[in-house]
Amino acid sequence: MGGWGAMLLGLKHHQLFGTVGALSAPYLISRQSPNMDMSSREQQTFGKPGSPERLERDPSTLLAAIPLASVPVLYLASGNQDIFVIDNRRFVERLTERKIAYEYREVSPAWALLGSMG
View 1 (tube, helix red, strand yellow):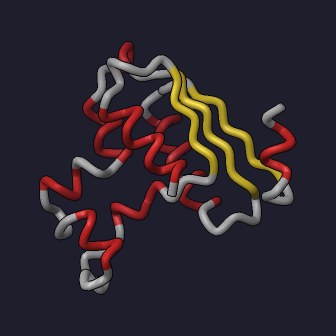
View 2 (cartoon, one colour):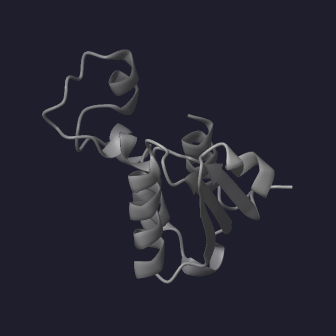
């Protein structure tokens, strides 16, 4: 989940980073349904639904709190057959709604991501 971690850390510490890049990030993982099984190790990491712990681990929530002039340059990419492509599209929708500049690439097949970076 390196793409999610990169975006999370880049937004949480936006004053330290000029650019944040995330490949195939599962942005919605910290917004899972409150009815989900919270016994899994991964979900325990995020805290209870609606808790401050969960909100501070949600890139969308962090993004909403950053002044527009302080948002780092954002680069996002996903394969169009990747299991997280919907997460990426929804995150891009949030960026567009807030008028945050970004670059988003969606490629097929997913493995072509690495070739498009060079």
